[in-house]
Length: 360
Image 1 (spheres, rainbow, N blue to C red):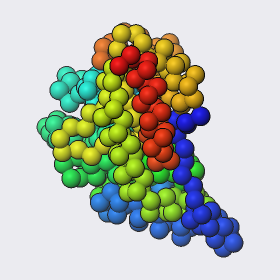
Image 2: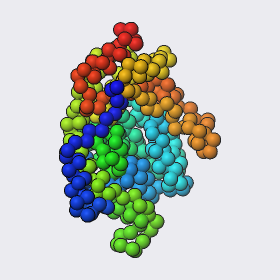
Image 3: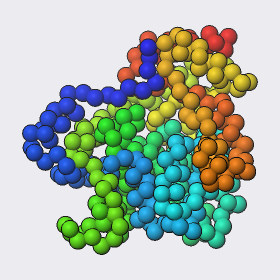
Image 4: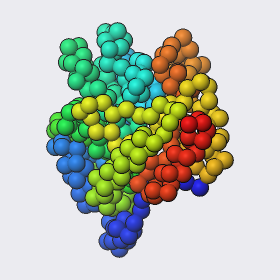
């Protein structure tokens, strides 16, 4: 079986964890600090705050910007549900804008029409490893005085016009095992704003600025040194992992036929957290079954857009929302293996299986 994802854990990660265990400092400590500093440098920003997951990173970042009840946050419905749920956690309401069918990311041309007096922020989701078209998004945000909070949970090391994801506003990342790098579980918030950095640290740790003095409501969203040790070792491998993903994607795109392969717009660096094709003509599920029968892992990210999820329809009143490009993508997308562990034989096997199905 060729798996859809395969975390790359080596001797470096194992040794790093053993060193932490031997040190006796296994909660948040020096490894977390070092990981934060290294991650900030990778993104080209001044600050990074480690958290317990990508979801908590999103939650904390929104709270640090004062987003709460009565506010609206414009974002995508074509993403993992944590993107929108993190807005709900603050008491605010997500407002969904349709996607660009070529990139699967927010369509900047549709954002302005969704702005209301309650709009507080735009949260672009850099889906599958490709940054959103940030220039027009930043222009709209500046015009209307809106915050920009990047959901870069799938875009470690991705670039837009030479600038890294997570550096356009306040960035958030996931370090879940399937991501381009992992800490087993964890998240990261990136920023150039010292005020936001300090607020995130306070919220992350029970609202404390000094031990046992709680200035505001906070949470236990800390990362442990055990997780940070894994993350630090992984961070040293990110460029190698991304280069392998990009090369694997290039091979697939140059050999697959009868399907629509991913695009990388000029001036952008796609790091292929997922390699996602479109299968038109209602044949997506049949191709997925064909690949599975031939031992090739595959996955639909995401079969049900957030605005059509049961909770959002029945409890939150999103039943009348229509996002035609999002809905069409959900019916056509299929992700194929692209991870760094793939061999040349694996790549050839994937191509042969897809092309045999499409009859090309």
